[in-house]
Amino acid sequence: MTKSTVDKKPSKEELNKLFEEFHKTGDPAIRDQLIEKNMYLCDILARKYVNRGIDFDDIYQVACIGLILAVDRFEPSKGYAFTSYATPTIMGEIKRHFRDKGWTIKVPRRIQEQSKKISNAKIHLSQVMGEAPTAKDIADFLDMSEEEVIEVMEASKVYTPGSLDISIESNDDGSELFLSDVIGDDDPTYDRIENLDFIKRELENLNEIERTIIIERFINRKTQIAIAQELGISQMTVSRIEKRVIKELQKSAIKNGTVEKKPKAKN
Image (cartoon, rainbow, N blue to C red; front, top):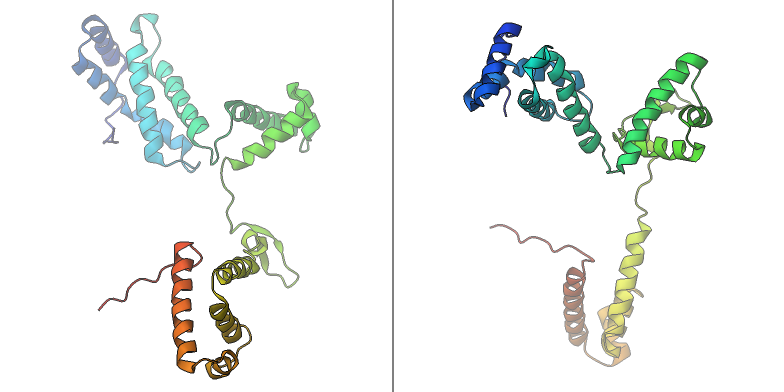
């Protein structure tokens, strides 16, 4: 359902008349009218939850679902206004959506529910005590164990991911220190270890002459002429073997994911 231009708020008498007719006839056209005339509620209530990690359009859609449920369940014979009934219904759907979809990492429903209780307890105890409550204070207030409180508080940190641009503290020179500055990078020696392991395995698959040529050329840095003299073969033979082995090593490296295949150059 897409958000359209919101009509002016309908009168209570107008709504009651439509609801009475809808309950008598079950006419879907009247149902559509009731939904359209109360769409303004979805817009008002959805805007209360903007900038909380979920797009407004998604929240608005959920609010519309709540409105539809309210229209279908409302009983005008009870005597109260439709808005009084629809508002908590719509809010309930929005809160349920945040509870189920708003967490960056999916955590058990128990943790989600307790997180809200602990958050409310922290606000209440802060006002009563005049300072931030400890985990033990919260645990005693909610009749929970301190371990449970700590577990929920830690799990609650995944509700919204922290920005890498958040300022942690100031450096000695007065410049700010950001979270991204203290996050470690991948150790470059990991790639070196993987490459050496690959080379070791591949060398074991070569015959003695092939292995000698590769080791002498690329580890001991000898010339092809020097290697040819040591092995008693021609320099051309050393060159041919070297090129063939290197080509085979490249194919094996690509096959095993050690290196990525280079794209062909465009003409």
